[in-house]
Image (cartoon, rainbow, N blue to C red; front, side):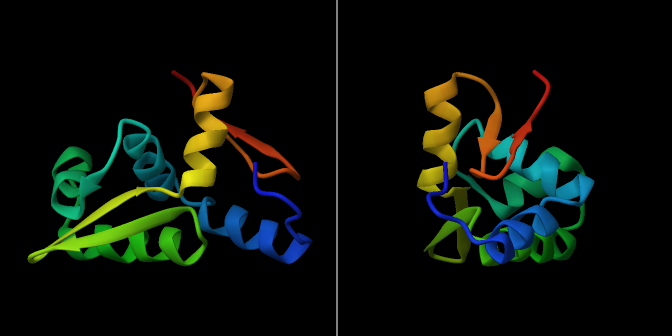
Length: 103
């Protein structure tokens, strides 16, 4: 759970998750770290579109990234990951609300 989120911060995260493609990306990253190319192939989307959506999720502090050569790897932010692991379900608890993903 994100501690002490302001209503503005919560709204920014919800806004970032308000797109079906971005929700699919988050759900994909429940499995673990992936590079943008892996996500693009998995979701059958063009690489530029995937990069755009991943940038939005990263700017909303839902994802973290690291570069390895020319590839960028993404993973759920540790607070998001912890909220999922504690509940043993695919859900993100923002403190103000909880987003659940069907199995």
